[in-house]
Length: 95
Image 1 (cartoon, rainbow, N blue to C red):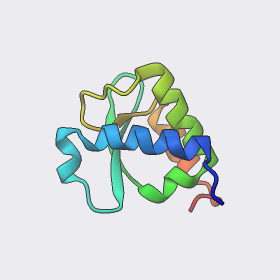
Image 2: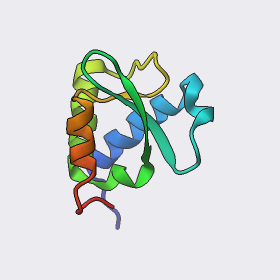
Image 3: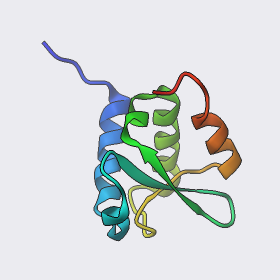
Image 4: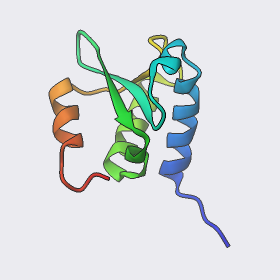
């Protein structure tokens, strides 16, 4: 018997939409592009393993609420500053 984690399902749905973007072909296997920043967006490559992290899943939910699934830049737009994103992802409990 299997079960689904709602965060993982939403993360997969968001990632599928993002990977359809034009810049997806410029991303190494096992990664996906995100854009972070308040005024000027910076493109960062994120390991797919981050999709398992509850904090990252929370960021994805916030991105979905704020931007929906339309990401014209070709990567997922994360609603936080670059510094906050790097701080969050550099914590030792990430995969």
